[in-house]
Length: 431
Ligand SMILES: [Zn+2]
Image 1 (tube, rainbow, N blue to C red):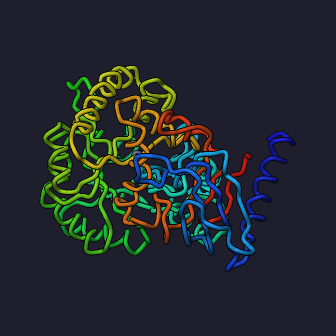
Image 2 (tube, protein in one colour):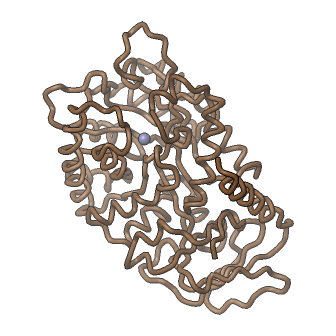
């Protein structure tokens, strides 16, 4: 690291520490040029946001500045709720995926995750749902708790720890079966074992249960797209979802095929991740049942373009071309239905670029307004925190992002935040 870079990092850390020292009871007044509140179809002008102890006390046009309040002037900017990324892997960092799992200790990866968390927050993402630490022990829950305590800067984290999978469904591929490899999923077969693994995750502090429903080890060779074989039986899925819900946790189902999507819906999963090949009728069913769709468009585009997973085989890269086309088709089908689409980037190798997913969604046919809702109020519903995150409203956490320009006209504005506020504290200030 150069001396200049080191100085910048040190200053950033200092600025964060200084901002974090606001005493309990201190009031801050954020003067917003224009405001997207997370729901409304238009931007409101001349809005003031009054914050105390990390929570929005009041919001509205022409609010007077309370006596003694610190004023943060965002009058030149458009202010949005902090962005929510509903599908991340903060414990992965740029570089070889396999090397991280095989050569780095969970402790090293927890440190790298801490760096990622700060970059993610500074990019305007104030909450993440982290769907698997890929073999990094309990790094995600440890980081979540350290951030919540204020020890290090980062987004609020809902952590899945590791997905529950059928034996052989999710691990590093290409090794002989007897090779002792770090586990990147909790393998469980049969209703008894899947219940036990869900209970283990609840005890370990998981906030959400991720299930992996297709096996790449058994990838269908004849397919011209990325696909996997079915793993869990309906009986296992029912037990798994029932146990998660009994523990108060929602279930995120990683599925590709329409058939597996249907099975996840029947079992009562709360969201379908990726859903590369879902059809319009399935999206309508999801809308009826209240199952959210987290498409994660960008990660497959980056993979196709060899910007991530650089060691992918030519065969995989060839399949990815048609995979991305089919995925965009599915996304456009979803847009024709009332299914709740929620933003998730899954772009773990490029920390701090999560909001590029919003650009990808708009490029694929979504309106900027719907893309913004998918990353704010609608995501808050899926994460079980409606009214607390994803909105600028009385009683919500004071998570704000200020950008130049109008993101309802040019969604890319959200990828260039000028100010980021989490819980009333400035996490980035480039004014
Ligand atoms: Zn993922």
